[in-house]
Length: 222
Image 1 (tube, rainbow, N blue to C red):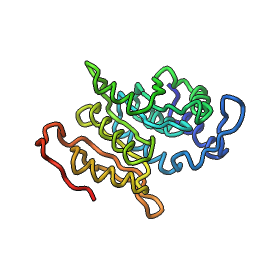
Image 2 (spheres, helix red, strand yellow):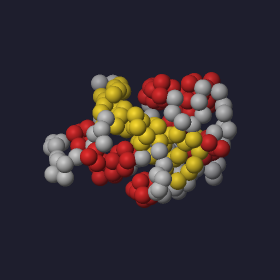
Image 3 (cartoon, rainbow, N blue to C red):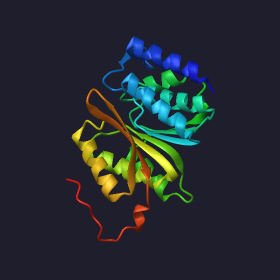
């Protein structure tokens, strides 16, 4: 796998350019579709601490968060098997993330799942045995129902002690998702990334088995 320094250089060069190459030769603007570079560094550092073996990413877009994830793993001396769920990699983003990632040797460690996340994750939950991930990064559809479903189903395929990061906490829909999940799904906030006076990314760990709740259990999240 590429070294951490090599991945950092590729990522920083992309941020400096402000655009990525699409498969048809046109340019894909990085912002506002990509993590701020400082937030990307934060994700990288947290991933390095976790040293995960199997990772999941919901919403890849430009692929720069993917590079940060692998950079963190490279710093920790591990090479994860990574799954990306994103139905818009080609039609929505012109394969810009794939063009970027193909400049590295990461693709042999990446499984692409180009289905809607509710379809892909629902199948994962129903598999026997079901996949088990150590770390997941959620940055997909930001409607409340999508974010909540992504977080709920992702928690079902997380290994014991695994961690989920969810992006864009400045958005009300993501805030409500986090409030519901911490009150009802047995997820515990273990770290929070803030920048510019706003919460940006929450890191959550499964603290207990939510399936063991009483059938009448519900904690209000308004």
